[in-house]
Image (cartoon, rainbow, N blue to C red; front, side, top):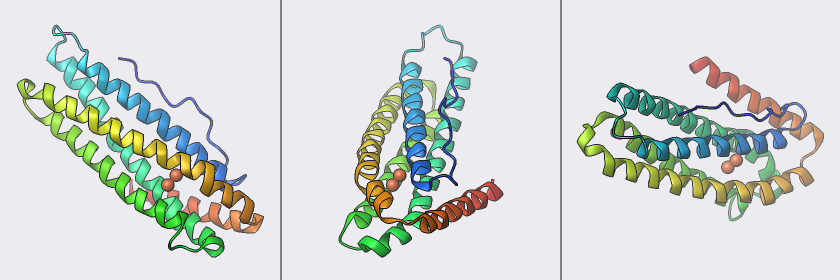
Length: 190
Ligand SMILES: [Fe+2]
Ligand SMILES: [Fe+2]
């Protein structure tokens, strides 16, 4: 199995924080697709695969998914703490798109954490119990990916369009500064 790095170019946050968040959507989608393919190929590993190789593949996928899920949660934090407060000054926080996005973030956090938990469990159980569990891991991952796709499509096509049309240059700069502070805070913790 070959494990490729995300090939895209990171958007410069100082240039435009909205485009930066859009680029993060692309990057997360690319990584989710990679994780999905890696899990599917685990199902297709030949019987003759030595246990050490199987274990190494499983460990790689587990680490990849754990880091991907924390990346997704960090992306939500950037939107919730850096972007939404400024956008709320224009469209309000309740009974509208921001409230819908916040509810979806909550549902997505649960879906991705569930996927991650199932995968960690899968890596720990005996070989004989793995097949059925792997099917559930793949199905849970696909459901979460599908929910995420719908979510980012709403953000890209509706919410971010409102941001582009409403936020001033100065406000975008403030949003960018807050996103950078969240990234720095996260880097310090790891
Ligand atoms: Fe979001
Ligand atoms: Fe997003």
